[in-house]
Image 1 (tube, rainbow, N blue to C red):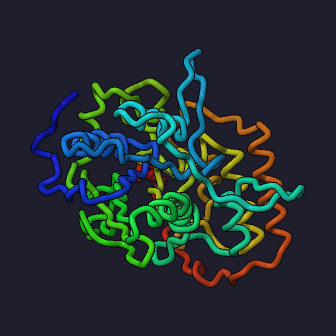
Image 2: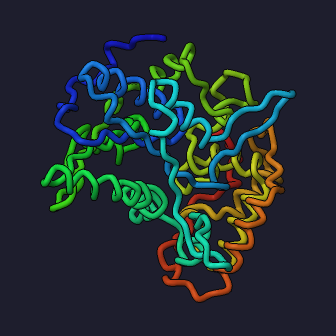
Length: 343
């Protein structure tokens, strides 16, 4: 495995000062690198027994497992668990969490982000990325609560947690501005610091690291599963992310056409657009009529989990939205001007 010593963090927090070390694993290419760097630091400090890893699952909206040419490629949630195990975290110290809601029989069931969008009435925007808090940050924070309650009783003081994430400057201007280390919460129960140990790694360095990594990367990064060409989607989180590039969205709509149509249904009923500059219905039409990157593989999305998502979303659409769709009335860039689908 390449050492990439030049890319190691210039400074590491005092890991021995924390009661819980909590890496957040997305299952993407960056979280694998983050886990390698972080666990090396945790072992060096002698505190790897304080590590509990977390994955905030997006359920059906994540990239699923696929079978291609007789080979099965794992989905995002599986990859997050594999990333945790590959760097020494026992299976019982990796926790997958998801937002839930009360089901028809009173039991808890997953509450999809798309259902939340349908109920809210607006898609997330750069100025209002509520999806990150609703589907990821809040559910992980809630998962810490039992541990925090126990440790606070034992220690008689606020519990110190270190949230470790794989965000990098190359991913966008908002992440470039984000400090590599900061305190994000402090109250009588918990003090939470955030560390981004691979913030300054370049995308090329991350890809090079993966050439002989002990864990595979998601199949969606390639033109077809197993190609190893990094010619698929550039990111791996929500299959259809409102913050993704046009090429990623065209590719994703081709790989998951049923899911794209469900997003378009939310768009039609609520009147809000998927993005302020592009409607997903226009992206789908553009992909069909003007051309788009070859999806390489198409997910059927015909199982019971997708059927449950579809029923949940349509149920939310029958209710009045909590917000009017006034954030997305800007008409943006034309999709079919020069048909440069690679942008």
